[in-house]
Length: 159
Image (cartoon, rainbow, N blue to C red; front, side):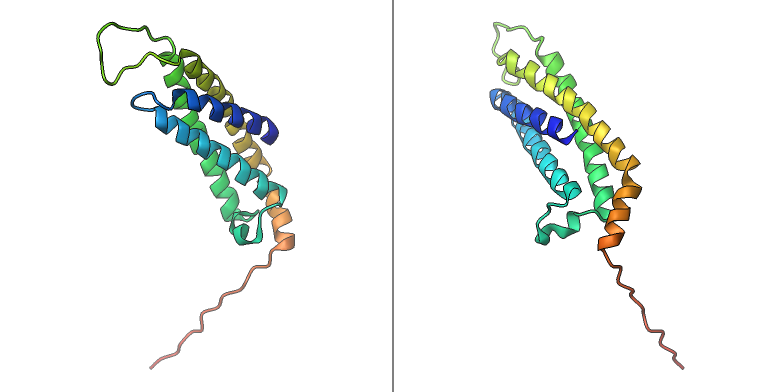
């Protein structure tokens, strides 16, 4: 799943360059593609155990698994909205009157972004489901390599 996501993320990132100049949401879609690529790399490194030591807080701890799950769902929802937005906007028709917030350019780029955002939406949902289903196995691996530190607060007796 992660390698398919990686390929789709690269294509989404490349198609974001053709729509970066569109008014209202062009640059935001570029940032979303960049964030989705970064998320893909981080989650691959965290789940495969290749996380650098300084980012050990992103490894297989219960907190990190919850964070990865939540961020994956969040990205899926954003990609769903962008997929529908650019899918509808790709059906635009040029008009003769200049309107500052309307541009019917890069129809192919909008359609490409819509398709890859749609694919990544479903792949992110699948990844979230896999994280949720495999949570116990991942936490089991984590417990073998992670020692909990007991923190005790001394009780102060006072009179």
